[in-house]
Length: 134
Image (cartoon, rainbow, N blue to C red; front, side, top):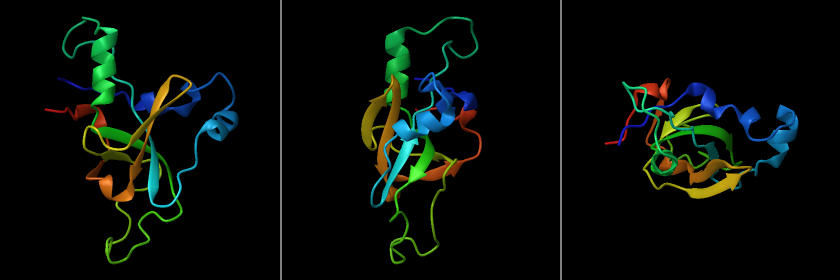
């Protein structure tokens, strides 16, 4: 299944029809070693064509995504120096790679977010648009 991402798809202003400050208040604050991530929206067309994907296909792509956008980190993320001797693996604003079913899924105003553990991050990518799940 091909996945393509639009970097604008993680703009939190799409969550509600209010100001960015009001939208941010609606998001949960991750606790402990958890990370709050937004799921980028899948492209609406099939790559290399003008064919529009079905709603089911888009939902499956977003469900099985391996790319997430870091919205916030809990206060204990990456504090364990024995587990993370080189420091944090990601920061707020990064696109991270995770396993397809990682984290706790939640919908906030029809937008999917995930809360993952700090050790669920498998990599950081600058531009996720070329990344596809095999």
